[in-house]
Length: 428
Image (cartoon, rainbow, N blue to C red; front, side):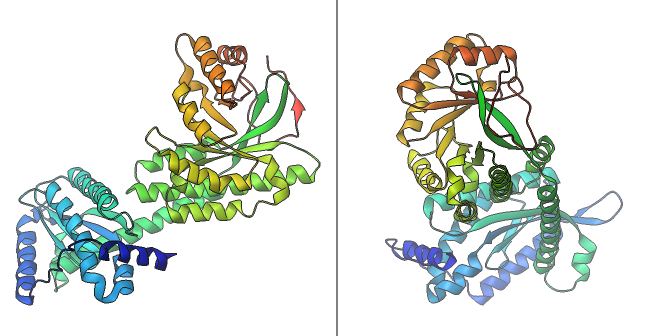
């Protein structure tokens, strides 16, 4: 997979008309640039109140450049010059005239900040990383790179005492901080996944007065921990990875539960939510689809996938692509949409089994009429509506009045740790 991506990358860059010539600085120029970085770094080192010296530094990493270099060989300079030009342009646009930076190796740029606070330096570096990601998508959509960063205030004495290059010492210190942070994150994720439980929210069909479907949800504490963690994540890639881990855990636990239910003679369908962002990159998509392929064929009629995290900006082509990948492993596909009629047309275009809506989005005046218009449009398009978060009696009565197909929430029935077989139910 990596090799094919690299071949695609090579073809993309080599196919560009008038590729920019590779620029190689002569040894004397490189030495001058290194000396300038060393000198400026010494100048901007700050003296703390306790008399110790500090340097506020950051690393911006283009993770994957070394793989590209090994793959492309002599074609490397033409390819790398574009990626480095994007990175350097982004760095310059966000640093002040007093700050300084230097490319340290194939994958790493080192930045030193003259007057920024640690919080300001973190914001600047995040802005740099976001701009690099955006520009790489525009200029080189096939480039298989991840962009990451580390920001830290370093003690100056150990850096100076190390003897050699100050840039090398700063890079080594930041690399160690990143490794420690990565290990802490891995430990946290292992503990989170080990302690997470899946709850099963009964989904009621009002016209038949039965519960034959359950929507799978992570327990509230796991959700709270995840939300808190998002504030500390270094970037989009790490967030996607965490979302993918949780979605993989959800489908794994759900299929185990379904196996136990069916093996004991019970029957019920499970709605398994999956976030669009978990399927946005190839690695996450392959990991999730690998789990889908393990679902026994006999169980697939009992599975409904619910795709959420879809925005108005999501291309319909992307939804069709993901829908085609998921549908063979399930009875059907649901897509979460706001209760707006225009979004039903998008759902109809990708032939979904139904749409899910959050009743929380229906708060406000005239809920009954709005629901009825939405439900009438869905019926005209032969799309089933699944309403979740039906937590109040008023919302429940409005949903019944609008003749929604399915609904679940606190006003219907509490979530269960183990789903029951299909059964009659009358919550109101």
